[in-house]
Length: 545
Ligand SMILES: Nc1ncnc2c1ncn2[C@@H]1O[C@H](COP(=O)(O)OP(=O)(O)OP(=O)(O)O)[C@@H](O)[C@H]1O
Ligand SMILES: O=P(O)(O)OC[C@H]1O[C@H](OP(=O)(O)OP(=O)(O)O)[C@H](O)[C@@H]1O
Ligand SMILES: O=C(O)c1cccnc1
Ligand SMILES: [Mg+2]
Image (cartoon, rainbow, N blue to C red; front, side, top):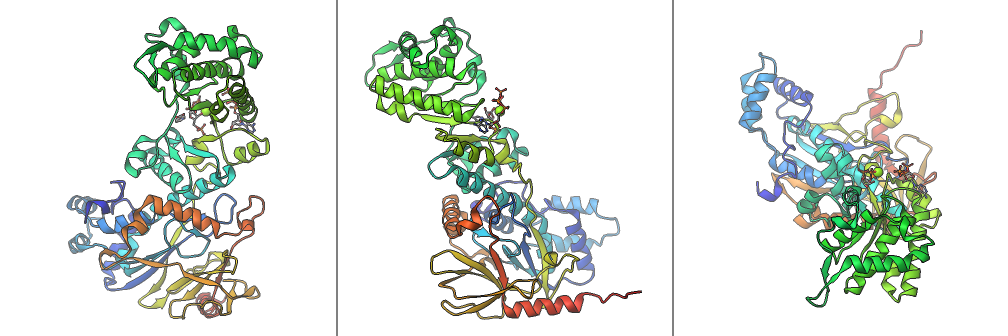
């Protein structure tokens, strides 16, 4: 194992599983199923957030888990103590020898848009080993895919021109929830995070402003130990406080307010922050009153900085009516740009935060907000709208014979057998449907008509003549080695770009918010017959009495 194949989180190890996997492993072993060969599918049944699409993520971590999969002596000792006393000692010797070298992992590329019932991963190998991977694979894929999908939805709401920052670590579901949220938000299209460790680990841009505490920590000018700042273009220092006070007097009439209403403590705090960060000055302006104090104090300091040759970055608003406040801020900045001949002032960045969710962004869009950047925490990282994705892991074939899980609900029945997945594209470049076939069938061909059947409903059928056919399941791991170039599966930038390009292949009606059209996931005629025969063979015939 090379170091770059270690999982991101050291908690990702074979005992990060449900006990029943190990219980089954023992019972399989006792039942002499050690040489049985299994095929499992990992898939979900329903798209999250009331949408009609999902983005697949977490694959890189699954591959890293495979690369490091083995039980340590201490794991074995713990299991020996935990399992019933009568557990055969030979089993622990067997377990110590287990690795993922006989596993084959086929998967859809991370960052691809995916749909219900489609196997995202097909895992093949010794039954015992494939079974032992279930829970860890699910925990690696479920949150990663949910989080990526959530981030994509926020990006769709905000549009491409707005910057999106993830601010959720403090509210996330623990350290791994927070770190994963930062990583998969970026993959889903956020521009950066406030989470410093995520920045270091994943090379994601880290950015931020300051909190109300910084403003509250000053009450007046007398607390300013330093008020001098060196000019950008020389070693000469000037009094930033005196300049800011002068500017405050000039700007107050533009806001139709009086200087007396503005907080001196806030101005002192902003001056201190500007002295610390003269080239990256951002100010939180809602501690006392946005229009009577915050905007005035910020603009005064920004113009004083301008006198010294520095360009301020912008403001953050964290309460109140964000559309209205962004509008008055932008109006003021444009007015200052014109009145005082500082053209860049018109484009100052306006960051908005405070309990923002997807709906808030849609609503702010309707109100014609003037925000350039949303800082989003709680609702993003906790996936408040839907906190879990229901990926499952099902046995579909054992020793080349199909296996099926029946259900009262036809939609919940598993699709037996080893299957391949093809995405068919129309001549306009959009995806038409996904087609599942038995692996023994020849792949669909470009410009050749293919019958696509609904997996359950026999009357729902359609012909497709694809302009392009893409085989979605690719071999990522075999014979103990990764079979894909490192860039393709392990580069966060490649995966992030894949999300973007994959989203573009999805027709607008599948993406709209209200009543989106379900994307078609079909089966070949051959697979339809095969599945339905198996369902019939396996479903008991009831007695009416
Ligand atoms: N123009 C707007 N349209 C729709 N939603 C908005 C708008 N402005 C703000 N919001 C949202 O409304 C909520 C306002 O939160 P809340 O009622 O707690 O007020 P607040 O401004 O935070 O008050 P406080 O000053 O006490 O913190 C937030 O979720 C925010 O994202
Ligand atoms: O609102 P979220 O989407 O979770 O975004 C992050 C929030 O975290 C920070 O303050 P915090 O909420 O800790 O305190 P505050 O609301 O009292 O400012 C920040 O000021 C945002 O309001
Ligand atoms: O940098 C910020 O403004 C920030 C970071 C985390 C949470 N809230 C705000
Ligand atoms: Mg808040």
